[in-house]
Amino acid sequence: MAGLGIRILGGQGEERCRANGDDQIVMVYKGAYEPGDRIIFETDETDAYYVIRVDGAMDEAYVYLTKNQVEYVIPFDEKKISYDPASFTGERHYITMRKAREYENKSYRNLAKNAIDQHGDTGCYPHAYANVETRGESVFAARNAIDGVVANESHGSWPFQSWGINMQDDAEFTLDFGRKVDVDRICLYTRADFPHDNWWVEAAFTFSDGSVEVVKMVKSVKPHEFDIKKNGITWVRLSHLVKADDPSPFPALTQIEVYGQNG
View 1 (tube, helix red, strand yellow):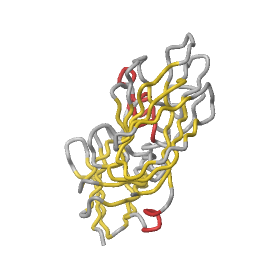
View 2 (cartoon, one colour):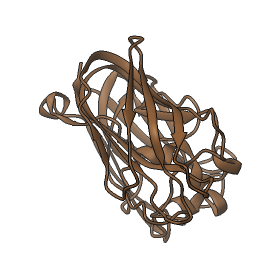
View 3 (cartoon, helix red, strand yellow):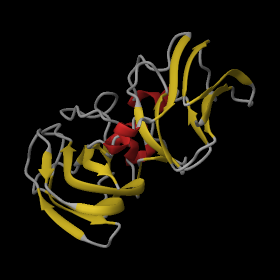
View 4 (cartoon, one colour):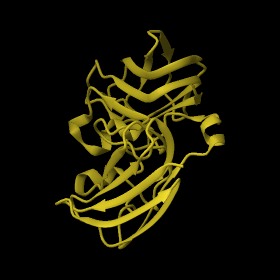
């Protein structure tokens, strides 16, 4: 059995709530969050799969943990607008953590989705990062492209958060799985807030095995689906993004989905 723990810490490191368990924890934290608060998820077994919910208004996240402790910072102010407004509010909070079940680890799924992804090396995968995020704003962060929200007909605050490239021609987005996976399909929901948005007509996927796949796209609200089979990869990078011949300088990515199984 895996020894698990959840703690709520204040901005000065003071512990406000704690729960421990074997293989599963259900915590109800009674109290309003304040800036600087964070949730600490702990396990004595790393390089393993877990299912974590940081808030009752958010999806569970199926994740692979490579560290004994993962710190989740409660978002406030500008950082909060890329989340459901109902999340992290009020004085009663539902937080859960459990060891993933064997059938979940063997299932075919969207391997890219991680609703609790954050900036930096948190030891929680999948993880998204990029060489540019428009003006450093939370609504244009790389993490938005793997949060599971696919609304793409506008831009800005939730549910229209996206990965924005700040009009940078050499923009690159990397999705790190944290372990080997086998994939057979990739879907891109490009942002489609026309006429505000441009769109990409070509892009390249580079994989950790060194292979490259060039794909074509058209102006569309619907997802672009690509049958691409790769085994034993640990990351994929989206780059060489070619804009359409359109007056708008603002293409963006709402969501990436990568389907397959753990390797």
